[in-house]
Structure formats: structure tokens, C-alpha cells
Length: 412
Image (cartoon, rainbow, N blue to C red):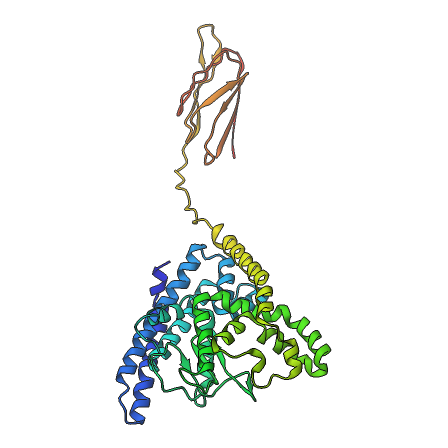
């Protein structure tokens, strides 16, 4: 479990990410005639730590369930999203242990490297939790956050502030531009012009910490709420607002009425009905906070039950793999001696049975029945006419006083 964290392929991948993370600020600093050495060193260190910590986290989760297919699918959904979605329909393609460890290495290393390049982590207070959470519990959000970094390269205009425990792109990817809506995934806030201290900044920063605190539950329940209310929202939107309600209905019920958004707007200190772009018809559809809470109680109760059932079914039912028993070499189990004469002149047979694992035998009627260990591969059926039999655990002697005795031994 731990050994594969330091597998050669994983270490090579981490090293590549760390080298790139070091070179980027150094080269950019040289272009702007500034020193980027310190940023480069921090980026390289965090890239290595991020990649290895994320890799170790996923390895432990997989190992705790014996690398089962169920664990792979659960981890694919809970921490990387796309692999879980794909393998739900395609079988075990992206959620194999090797692939999941690779995803963890890339996301953890990239998250750490970008955090060091822009020096976002404040190494005090809650900032001490921000980095380890970003590369473990909040991997789902930061998987999408890494994609935001890639998309925003060259036009995202990263904010100049440091040690705020989050990235901010003043421009870049967003779901709406007129009016402008910010978009946050993991520790990356995109299309956000307001800087630290602004109301909207506090709103988006709330999403950053929601992701860190609730991990997979935040990401999956946010998406689940949207899916649950999508069709009802379309119907209600068309009824209230006409054809435009086909779009505005989902925006009102899936976004503005989403519990996670209701929480963030409360931190922002702005009523959801007062947001730019909200029409009078939209206001009719946006629920009061108490209604959102009322619907949230059964929704999150069900989500929690499903999450517990998933965890128990995958990890609770897992047992350590059984090692193969050491099977002893085969030995003869029965030996027949030539016939000898009893005092009355009758022949008899002597049978010596060396039995591996047999602890006792019994005589039922005229049939001798030995008790065998499951690994004992011999069965012996002996039909005799005798009044008594002396039996030991390893060897027994059967004597019969009949003229004819029938002995049959067969191997299975």
C-alpha cells in the first residue's frame, strides 16, 4: 500500500511536475527582470509534497478496500469525477489503481506547484490546513480547479495578492459574462474582478472552504441538487416566464436556490433577489432562505444515508486477502500388507493409514469413518466385519476375523 506511493513511475511524474513548477517562475521572473527563485523553490517543494500526499491518500483508500473495483469507482466519483462517470458506463477503464494513483499525482502535484508559483498559502492559522486539504479531501474540486488554471493561461489575469489561501483570476473562464458571474472550483476563483475584502470575494472564498471542509459531499451534492431540480425547474420556468423560462428556470432553482449558494450569498450579505440580472419574474421563482433550508433537510439526509451505505458496502465489507495455505507434499495415505494367518487359520488384512490433518476416526456399524481436514484429498471407504477397532490420530490398525474382507480405497 505504502510502497506504491514511492513507485518509480510515480516519483518520475512528481519530479517532472516539480521541475516545471520551479522553472516557470524563474523564467517569468527573468523576463520581467525580477528574481523568481524563491517562488520556484516553494513551487517545487509543494509540487513534490502535493503529488506524494495525494498519491498516498488515494493509495490508502484503495488498499483499505483491497483495491476492489467498487473502491475504484467510489474514489473515481468522489475525488476525480470524470473517471467515476466514465467507468459507470464503460467498465473499469479509468478507475484502476494505477490510473487513480496517476490522477492523484498529477492533481496533487499541479495544485501544489501552482500554489507555490503564486504563493497563495498562508503558513499560519487555517492556512496550515489549506494545502493538505487541497491535495486530499478536496481533490474533487481541485481536479476541476487544475483545468481552470490550464484554461486561464494567457488570458486569466491572475491576481497579484499572496497568502490568501486561494487563487483569483480577475478575468478568465466564467459561466456568465453579462452580467459577470465568478466561477470557483477547489481553491481557484475565476472571472472575479473584486479582490480580498470585497463582498463577492467573500462569497467565492466561502466556496473554497466549503470544498475543503466537505470534500466529495460538497461537489457531489452541489451537482445532485442541480440534477434533481432540473426538470421541475424547466417546467416551472416555462409556466412563470414563458419560453425564456427554459433557461431561467434552472438558473433560479438549480443555482440561486442551491443550499451551497444560499449559504455563500448569506456570507456575501446580499439578497439573492437583488443580484444583477434578476428580473421580477425571477424573483417569483427564487425561494426564501427558510424554504431552501426546509428542502435541504431531507435532501442532505438522503445524501448522507447514501454516502454511508456506499462507504460501508465498499470499505466495511472488505477483508484482507487470504494467503494461500501451505499445502504439504503428498504422502501415501494407505498401505496394505500381505495377508497373514490368524490363530484359527483365517487370513486378515492389515491396513496402515497415515492421514494428514485427521484427528479422529470412528467405527459406525461395520464401516470405519475417518474425520478429515478440508485439505485432505483422500477418501477411504472400508467395509469390515469386526467387533472393535483401535484408532489413533495418525495411524490405525484394523483386523478382521472374517475369511473375506473387502477393502476399497480411491483417490479424489
